[in-house]
Image 1 (tube, rainbow, N blue to C red):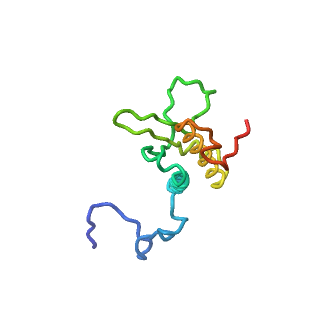
Image 2 (image 1 turned 120 degrees about the horizontal axis):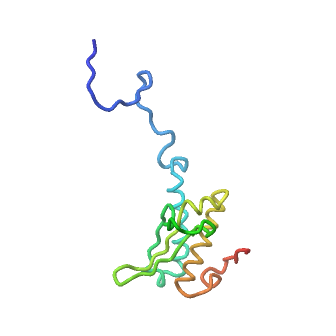
Image 3 (image 1 turned 135 degrees about the vertical axis):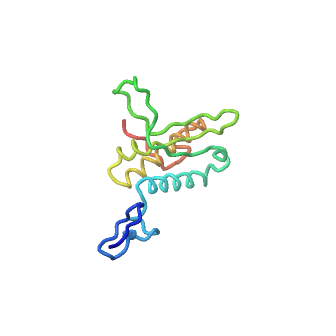
Amino acid sequence: MRSRVAGPRRRDRHGRGLRGPLAPPEAPLSRTRAQRFDDLVRDEVRRLGQRWSRELAQVEFAVEEVPQVEPWADGADPVPLSETRSGGTAAPPSIVLFRRPIEARGDDEREVAQLIRDLLVEEVADLLGLSPESVDPSYDTPDD
């Protein structure tokens, strides 16, 4: 009779050992949606930083899952996709993108990337007091 040591049980499929990862860590398949979203934001911030590095040196960029919405807010109000938080004496200004609402608006990764680009250009323009077209000449004014 085998004695069993109490502890966490691990899945061992018929003596073949524990399951391994489905894809190697360097493969794009192994990246989560949140990680891919962060990569898109990082690429766009890097692109904007090439032109506006001095002006954006003190600006922090962040990604949050969802915006904080007051429970009594009107349901007809649109959910914010991004926001600029002005810096105080101890904190620098920051631009925050909200991942889930942005992903809900885009049908595929290309649309999400375009939306990230547009939002960052608009927020940087607002922060610098410029028009989006002057921040990024390839910016297209969204259709209203």
